[in-house]
Every structure is written in structure tokens, then in C-alpha cells.
Image (tube, rainbow, N blue to C red; front, side, top):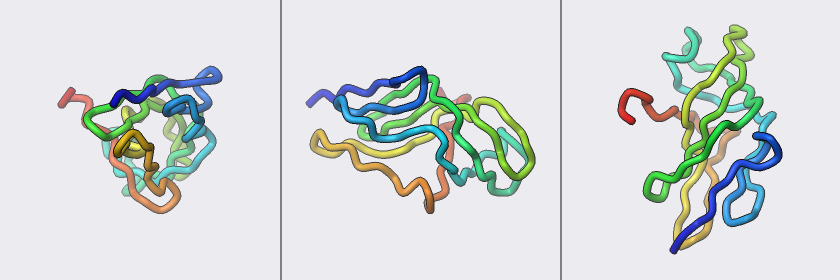
Length: 106
């Protein structure tokens, strides 16, 4: 079963199967030592650059700012949910600690 994954509205939304599922201006908790020196950055998403599916996992390449230290830039592809039986199940981005996919492993 194929699933359409796209970035809409100049990087403001992730669409899965033509339904807006993830938006910018969310505060994500990350484990991202390559992004900034904070032990656990509170990352304010400001825009999405690309989206991809790796198996069932949907990841978004995003840029934004750590509100703790002020570091800004691209954090990489951050997993935001899974597609199971054609249905998107988003991770709890307000409470879960997300880990960007290692760019060197790509």
C-alpha cells in the first residue's frame, strides 16, 4: 500500500495521504548532540525542508532553534510517526524525546 508524504505551504505542514498531520511552531524535545550543546534541547520547529519514509517510519528534515541556548539551523530528519496499514500514527511530540536520524548513516 503506497502512502503520499509531502511538505505543504512553503514548509509549514507535513501531509500524509493528503491530510495535514504535523505543523511547524511545535516545541520538540530532542536528543541531538550534533545540533547544540544542551543536554536535551527544546527545539522550536520553524520550517520543514523534506520528508521521507523509511519502512513504516516517517521523518521530517526540519530547521529551527533551541530555545535553551539559541542555536539555530537544520537538525536533520526527525522521526515523527509511523504508517501502519496505511494509517499515520504520530508520535507524542510534546512528551517524547525524539532523536534525529544520524546523517552519517545515510
